[in-house]
Image (cartoon, rainbow, N blue to C red):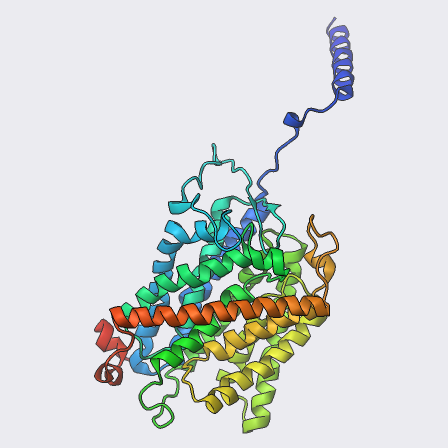
Length: 456
């Protein structure tokens, strides 16, 4: 009896299944895109890696290159900027950069991160649509909260990079005010132009920037140059011994930057995929190549390869490959790295000394010049299939037209950043003042501004 019932049930099930599959599928029954746990795990890891680039990576890198009396103040700058930018990004920055508004600035739908958790129900996130590095909107497979925090770490490190240009002489109050104003008036608009859902640099010029050559590095480098010119040189520049206090700190910081950069570049693929893998490979290759080329250039010029030189070269290579990392093949990465090492060496030594400005820790020499080199060479070495999207199946390949588009993007970023940074610095100077007094500078910012010192 049981066997007969079982056979009848199986037959009924087969009939129902056949009838069901013969019916036209309803759109409402189509499965919605789901959060991918592998992509999310990689993006969580990448977010932590990029945060590590600022604290402690950049903090140690910069602190190792200043004098002993300014080490704590330099570390304080990176840590304080991390805290300030987290709040600014949460309250307003993310919404203006990454929501739909117009071609120049985003909207206010995510102010105070309003609605960010609306898609979370019993631990199941709903994917969201965002343009990530291209002009074509893409439905991501990670929670928006992860994407928001990942981009927050970019917003944190960018103003922290600028601090290298005016190290050892800016008021802490001025730094705090400058960070808030600059991030909202310079960083956020450029981020929207390049990465936002309807940004005009990506959609109208057609320039590509995988992980922040324009948004992060050219922005920070140009702002650093303007700040160095407006604030002026350190007391004793060119006369006194301004050599680094502890290059051990600097090489540890550079090493943390290198490792963290895999999150910076490979994380910009927004998932654990082939493009992330290629971005990781090209990042390693370009950084190593730039370290070698800077070392060789310095060796030929001075007769000695230095620790400061090779770590600066490696960072220059990381900067240059950033806009290209997800769009170029290993051969292109090698050329970009070799070029960046030599050109950044010239910018951080020859150009700086020829022009006479005091870019204390080479924010412009490494990040500004490296970012320009990388953004331009992206237009030369871009490999179509790596930059393909649903809207552009052929992708973007290296060509003269693409080089011109990259140059236009670089020019727009330089002009916007230079003008706005100058205005912001003047506003800060009129309100709280930019520079510490001569006595405070001679005493050192550790004691003068923070009442602390290194005892060892």
